[in-house]
Structures are given as structure tokens and as C-alpha cells.
Length: 299
Image (tube, rainbow, N blue to C red; front, side, top):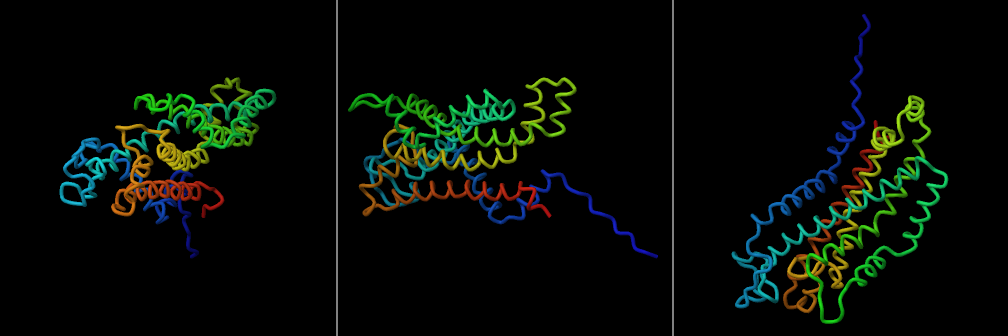
């Protein structure tokens, strides 16, 4: 009697992508690091050994101890506390900037790709103008425009808002281009044509049919953009144009540590390693996520 082989039930694309992601050791390590970093940022008030802006002039440039595991900086502030709060600043800035990027870039890209014609041409010309400027130089220009005169500093809250606006305007064109390409590839599919034939409004088609089918490459792009935004924020803060004191920033910590890099290398190493590890984790996780969501790599 012939044996009957039962076919294994096929997994949904989402379940298949999750399975592939779990089997990727790089994705597991980087994902665990990212989750841990988010928890550290959220629980900074509980994890901090000392206040991030509490000076201790009697223990300036102190070595590592039980009270100060990574020592203190030139003003006696606890380095570990500033690293922890720096994670909150970096992730917070990246979250806001990526939200602005999604709101502008994804919306304009889907509209341009779906409608085409004059709407597409007008929106893409605006995108081309934004692409003509180097990203970080345009951000520096926008931040420098609102900087007060010599000897004056922006209020910390104003500096954060300025940073949000500058980086938000810089990073949306790339996502708009990606969303436009996805929308153009999908707008003539059968299910889109069927929705039009049934009288479904364009807004509903964009939100219910087009948007869900473009999310895979969008998610991958956003994951990698988070790393780029964090690096840009650190660069601006290093130049004195980003996050202003008393808020700690890894870029500002690196700049402040340069005069002490030989006598007290931990002041430079700690924020540098934190920034490099975070950027690499998001980049590698984005690469792994792209491989997991690629239908050509499915078994």
C-alpha cells in the first residue's frame, strides 16, 4: 500500500519572515541589543547611578569606582549616568525624526506613485531639490540659521526642536522615493483595479490596499534610517549644533572628552563605543530584516 505524505501547512509571509529572522544569529544578537538599549533608555531614571548633570567638583576626572563605575568627567559628573541618558536622547531624537520622515516621505511617495502624471512630476521635483543638497551639510545649515550670535546659546528645548526640524527635512526624500517606486509597481495590480471597479475611493485604496503591501521595504529602510539619524545627531552635537547642555549627548560627550583622551581615555571610549555599537546593531538588524522579508530567499 502506497504511503501518503501529508504536505506541511505553509506559513504566512509574516510567520515565515519571523522564522527566518529567529534563525539568523546576527539578527538575534542585534535585536537583543536593541531591545536592551530601549529598556535602558526607558528606565534611565531607575538605572542611573548619579544624576546626569550633577557635578562633584571634589571628584573630577576620577577613576572607576563603586560609586562611579566609569569614573567622572571634567566637571565631576558620572560618566555611566550620562551614557544611559545619552541613549534616551539618541533614541528619542531618532524616533521623532523617523516619525517626521514617515509622515512626509511615505505620504508624498504613495501619492506620487499612485496618481502619477503631473502630481508625480511636481512632488518628485521637490524631492530632487532636496536630494541636491548633502544631507549633513543641509542639516548644519538649517541649524546654524537659527543659532544666536557669538557667546549666546539656544535654550535646550529650542535646540531639540531645531534639531527635529532640520533632520526631519533632510531624511524624508529617500523614503519618498522608495514609497513611490513601490506604489508604481503595485498601482496596476488586479486587486487595485478591482477596488477601483467597485467604486472604492482613492483614500481607502491607498490606506487599505497599497500601504500594507509596501510595508516590508519601508520597515527595512526605517530601521536603517534610525542608525543614520543617530549618527547625524551625534555629528551635529559634536560640532556644537545639536543637543545643548544640560542634556547629555554621545556626540557632545565625545567632543568634551577630546582634551582628556590621553590621560583619561575612558571619557572618549565610553560614548564612542556606545554610539558605534548602536549604529552597527541597527544596520545589521536592518540587513537581516531585509533578508528575512525578501520573498526570493524563502524556501
